[in-house]
Amino acid sequence: MYSALFRLLPGNFVLKVLQVVVLLAFVVSVLFFIVFPFVETLFPEEPSVNG
Image: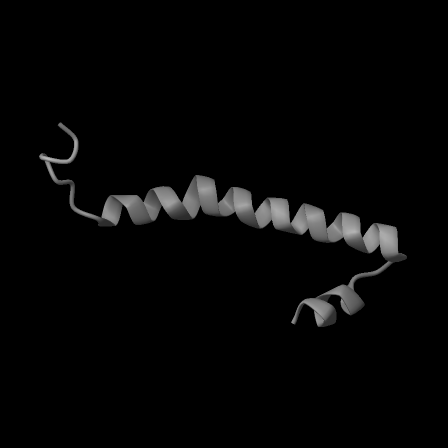
């Protein structure tokens, strides 16, 4: 899967690596700022855990 993505990206090796790093940073930031906070709201809050 990763090699197919790497072949599809335009440019030489350095540009492909830069594009992969930017895509990875985008995915990680979406996970941390959008997905994980939403998933956290789905879990019930236990009063004994939070003090």
